[in-house]
Image 1 (spheres, rainbow, N blue to C red):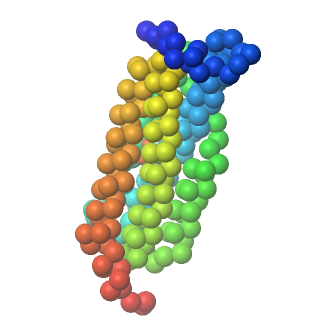
Image 2: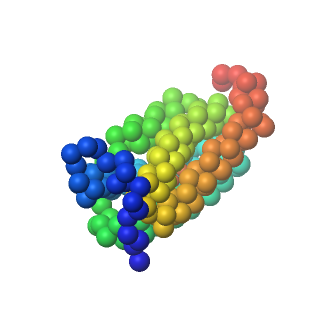
Image 3: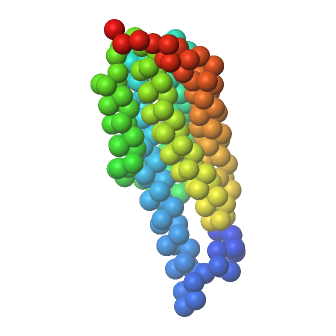
Length: 188
Ligand code: FE
Ligand code: FE
């Protein structure tokens, strides 16, 4: 069951507004941001299989495969958040994620199949995506707490951890091999 809102928002309200008004504006912003990340996650479930297919190393392929499964779970968790907010699960187009995904597509177009250089480019593109998600989930987790919704904060924090882990995993793949391999790669 949704909890009632905390009193903290009331103490921070802008002068001249009632508690309800200030709460509902912030809550509205919060719901809007949830719609943005919901659209973004769903967009990623379509992009990740393409990135997996394009990757050269098995390690990167399996990282994308694992993260696709996690991303599907992120969508499910957000559906749960909508439910807790008593809102319809509707996405709002996220221009940033659309742009990041089209950059990943450009990497695939601009690099040669079967090269470590392509993997380097894919890792850069994927880490930009993860950092966008980390920023989103980090802010939204904090905001959920401000709104007195620890139930929602807990769900968002779970996803935040997985995005951070993925980011670190990608750093590892780059630093432990792919970058060096690419550095020794000559043009055909
Ligand atoms: Fe995600
Ligand atoms: Fe992610």
